[in-house]
Length: 155
Image (cartoon, rainbow, N blue to C red; front, side, top):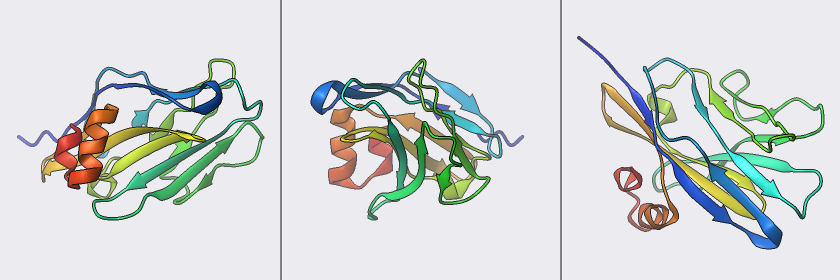
């Protein structure tokens, strides 16, 4: 029987300049391949009254790629692929959840939530053809991932 899955782990708060921070609050979420996945991002921006939140992905040995910008304005999402990625900005509780419509092998990458100048990191890796794993990493693991270029290190 074929059971592909995706697992989401937690990220510790990351502090930035001027009282800014980005946090990934989830403990663990498991979904099947082809199902939507939600990556949560909580922000605190005491210095910026109008937040701009950015989501990036990074493939191994590639620079980060901007995939979505979300603002409090009623403008539509500025996204890389319409319908595949979406986000909602909830200013009351300072969250910007990011959704991938259906997880596939092409989503195997590192995902960043950013509130300038802070960055939170999510790692999505595909350990086998039948498994898809999404994991949040802490800064120590993030450093190892960037230095080693190995997605498995951020899990």
